[in-house]
Length: 120
Image (cartoon, rainbow, N blue to C red; front, side):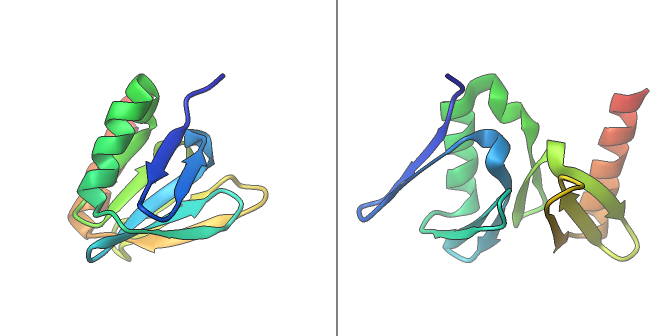
C-alpha cells in the first residue's frame, strides 16, 4: 500500500494519496489543499506545518513536493507550464484538470532552472 498523507484536526481528518495532491497554498493561518479531482479543502494549518507533515509522513515520496516562495507547495509531477514574466504557473495532468497559480518571478525562475537541470 502506498503511503498516504494524514492531516488531522480536532474536528476532522483528511487521508489522501500524495499523487492526488496538486498543490497547497497559504492563506494566513490556513492552507488550501487542491486535489487532482478539482476539489479544494481548507485546512487549519500553516504552510510550514503542512511541509513538516509531508516530510515526516511521506519520507522519500515527499520529494515530489516543492516549496515555492512563502505561499505555495506544489507537486512537481503536475507542473505543466511556467511563465516567469507573467508570474504564472499551470499545474495540470493534461487530460482532466488544470489549475493556475501565481508565484513571484524569482521563485518561478528558480523552479524553471531546477527543472532544466534535471533534464540535462
